[in-house]
Image 1 (cartoon, rainbow, N blue to C red):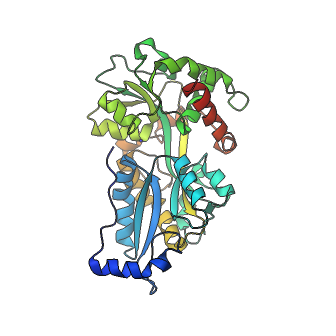
Image 2: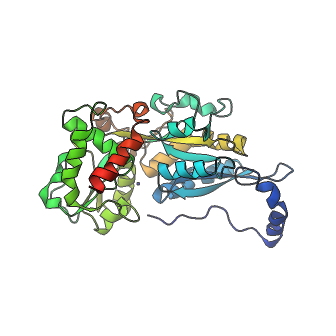
Image 3: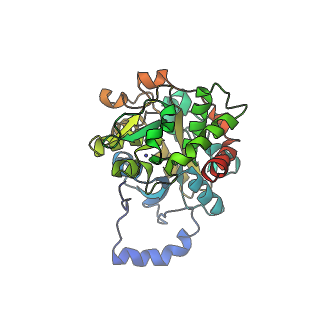
Length: 362
């Protein structure tokens, strides 16, 4: 991976509103949020994923952070995906509308190269030293904050025979019942998985995987389920789908087992989301304090126990029953399909464009 986004900042009183009006000229020059001239409370703006991610992250990370740092409040701006974050940051580069932003690790390097993100000060983000290797940034930019993997999802009430393989997506019994939101990282990861199954090298030629997806297209009921693929599977709009394991596990619990995530027998592809300091933030110190908290062991355990991501902090120990359902599990670790996300950065957009043009629009 839906709950409706919840407001994180309550309305101010009449007197505070009047003060805000008189100070709007000053606050308009800052990146986002505001702080009093006397160094009072600051508001940092955080762009994060919508729906269940927002609900869980707010409860387990933002609210405890605000309690521990009463001089800082966090405004959550929900976004659909990394492409939306990139577009928003590009449009507001000279006067950024956010201080911290989540972004897929395959897209974040583009934002780094364009000067949309700033490097972190390790002295202000000491928890960087506690990260697992795959979550570390090699060049000082935002580190990983979540680890997840691609999954098949199915509706247990509608499907008699549960899928076990990526190849099952082509099963004739699922024809017209598939939800395939693959015009993003899910599609890129699926191409990597299909290339492995087909005995091909994704770094040399993705035509075999694209052709295989073209064969699947007639069976797809929707390429863009609303509000998301997990709700579509739960409601019965789709019987089979492709999505992320963490949200699939979350919906498995909240749907009473109607939504079931599957780790395909051929293995799966791991995905990393990064947490980044927006360049020219007017609240860089507070933003880095928030990033440090989010990657800390306490926050990682709380969030991942609730949302089924694998922790990026090596000192975060999840509940055993939760860990077994994440990409950190021994089973998932044995069945990871290797992918070079650094190499993928310069091909990501071209791959997504081919999916849109040749598979979805073909």
